[in-house]
Image 1 (cartoon, rainbow, N blue to C red):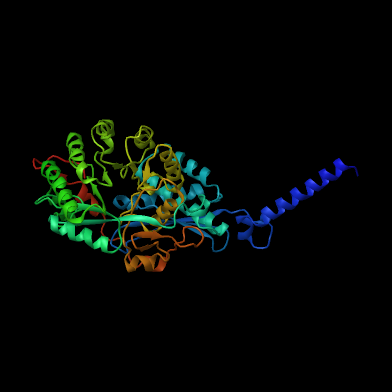
Image 2 (cartoon, one colour):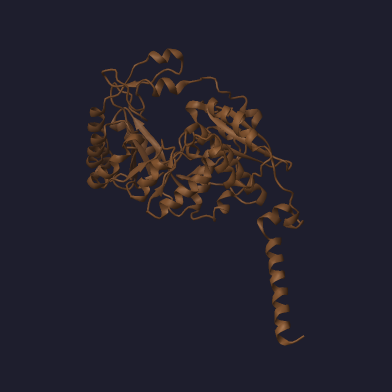
Amino acid sequence: MNRRQWLQHSATGATALGLHSFLANSPAARAAGPADAKNLSPLKITDVKTILTAPANIRLVLVKVETNEPGLYGLGCATFTQRARVVETAVDKYLKPFLIGKDPLQIEDIWHSCHVSSYWRNGPVLGNAISGIDMACWDILGKRAKLPVYQLFGGKCRKAVDTYRHASGKTFEEVEKSVRGFMEQGYRHVRAQIAIPGQAAYGSKGAPKAKSTPSGNADKQTWEPRAYVRTVPKLFEHLRKKLGDEVELLHDMHERVPPILAIQMAKDLEPYELFFLEDPFSPEDVGYFSKMRERTSTPIAMGELFNNPNEYVSLISNRLIDFIRIHLSQIGGLTPARKVAALCEFFAIRSAWHGPGDVSPVGHAANVHLDLAIPNFGIQEAREFTQAEKDVFPGCPELKDGYYWANDKPGLGIDLDEKLAAKFPITDDPPFDFQWGNLRRADGSITNP
């Protein structure tokens, strides 16, 4: 053997040894135990089912994807509170038979094939149905690799997820007291909402609401924008005088006012340096964002009602918003949300994923895993889970010192007690129709919720 042959032989041996070491220590190999990674049996989806439950009196939709590997399943959030049973039908009657036998680790292919499977696409029912499948597949991948999902996304960019909570009241003093309460618990960001006397002001205590029964269909829900846009700047003037500049303040307009009034209110709020002003326009009025950007420096968050990429891609690429507020399950789950986050990173836009009570604890866990892994994280809307929710969903993200903390369990780190979930059935169909569908101006004309 000459010198060149010896070198080639040595290099080949070293390469083989290195490859063997890599495979032996890969996530798939560790998940398989002592067996070589190539001996892992192919995974197949054997069942898909929906679980509807309401442990906090909010209608939640969960999807469970089961596999042919004993004990290996994934959970996903498909919560479209206003149309829970329609999503249930979409999953059970349409996506389930389409998915049986497919490999749950082929996440990208599953997402795209489900997205076009109904021909018509980009709607909230299909988006939430796909989200339940998508999140469950990521959960399965994490469990099989014995890694938290945030590790599959590239690892942590931060130790925990900064959050904000909701403060409201009938008077400025009540709102101030509520904000102080959250500050004392360690929160650095608080959303402030104020009641408008005699009106159905969004997110505030004391506003009249429709009953969650058929009789509520006759309840009058009145909304007039002028009193609201005059009152809100006065609220934040009060809060800044009483609380100073240490707390970051937010406000949600909930796309309820004419665009020209929204632009004026954003200008009026400039002296109070909001962390962001949310949803100043409805999705139908996104063309006004270029006008707003020219006229105010108030940071803008938008996206809670978005379903279609065409609603938000141009806002991002033209730098017309500062925070993206999409509801992860509404657009189809973690797979598209990761792409939105990556797009936003190139345009200095931060995340602020939707995270109210009508996101299940599984959905909140998905939010947190994505928040941990993206460099352009901004803030996360949070809620305190009830004891019933913690019992039904073991492994809920922990809320402490104003942060969400994820556990390090494989997958999304959260489970579902199906027997206990069944003790909290959905019984109040359909409450939101009366609340949102009957919001009207004083003259009786319908207006945005």
